[in-house]
Image 1 (cartoon, rainbow, N blue to C red):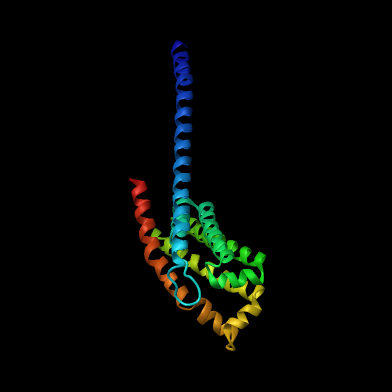
Image 2: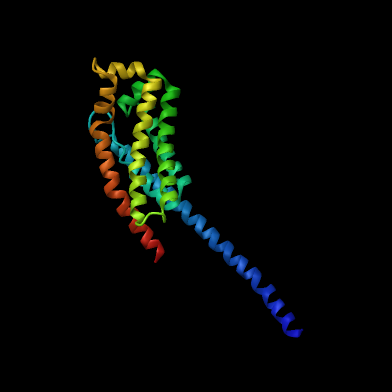
Length: 220
């Protein structure tokens, strides 16, 4: 009887300590996660601003999707969507200020739809790609395959929603930009074209390598 009481008192003394340690560990994990997300968000903003100085064709390529995808893979769909939202917010500001010439034309034609399109395509690209990774990670033989699939999906969603938004909200502008050629032909050669190919290749090469390297480092 006495031994049971002693064990009970020891358990009562250890329980608050264990709870306190768990709370500290959870708090540390939350702070670390928030710090990583904030760093990636700043990187997204900087990369997108710098991207406006390097142009291929009439539109700016989204090099920024690299940290968006990496953040989604490492920190989950919520952070992926948040980083995509940061990307969309920076693009929206560029459209309003004229930093993005094509975007300024769209903003002048329909401000609400322009901002909505920028935000939705960015958030969707980050969230959906990260969600696909979460679903496939661990189910495929090689985890890098899940990363590569999510990497391909991010620019595909971003560009696909942009083309869909152009067709739905800015068809007259799209016809004017096509300059007499077929609208569908222009969408593939003008809106998508080399921009999408380079953006896709950049993501496929960099994202899986960086993501896997960070994941292995965290496991040590």
